[in-house]
Length: 346
Image 1 (cartoon, rainbow, N blue to C red):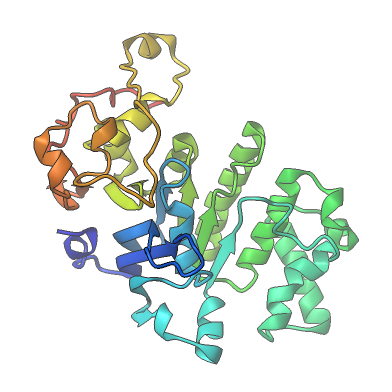
Image 2: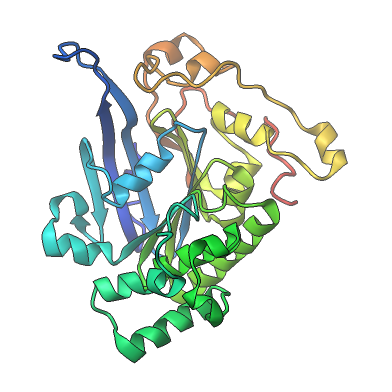
């Protein structure tokens, strides 16, 4: 039973992802007779309710950024549905897709390369407003200045270029551009991973503030659990192109059900030395397998200390183990049996 099936009774949801797949052709040779595909995203289901922040977390190469790009229609899907406000985005084109894209914006990982170095701050923030014919002249100037105020940038910076700013300031410029059209959904692709820790907290707090102010819905993609914990309402854990666990942040940090999630949480450093001594450290042996040649059965079984014969053969389905807590594992952990206690309260 997928997350979509379980959550279909939700009062209101903005985005629904069903059976989403993205395969890249990596066949070798001139004729490419032996077809081989890299399965970056391999049949995932997600549902995002209006006004919430869904965090997507996992190791590099798990498919989380590809998922974000598919939702943004920056990549063409191999299979599946991406339903936004009742419409499958992949069936739209031309003017209909352009209008829909105004409602879905993105904050990128690198706050420098995502900004045109030849454009001034004013023009960068104004670009979506001009492109979609929202404003021009005096009204455009007022709107850009208001956006700069909202993200904490001095209006005098409007004539400067991106290279004149710090990483945190550049990301504020990117955020101002992303919210300029007052979108309904913002896909945040590791927006703080390139920033210093102290700046990360400022940007995350700004995003929380803007979410309330502009009634935004976030998909927050990251590989660091502390950042995801700070901003998310629910968290989806991905491993090798699959979603292996979905639940609220409280349930995830207090009692993970999937062994992979347990391993990720055990790597989170604790400030309290009394909790640190009690913490069970779990080392995930080996590297994540190649998505071009994923293991049979459960994709995590080669690195799982709890794996049994069934795990090597049968693919586990994402199912609801506890109310609101979904896991794709044949032998999910018992709540409280791992290291979950104490992390969330810090």
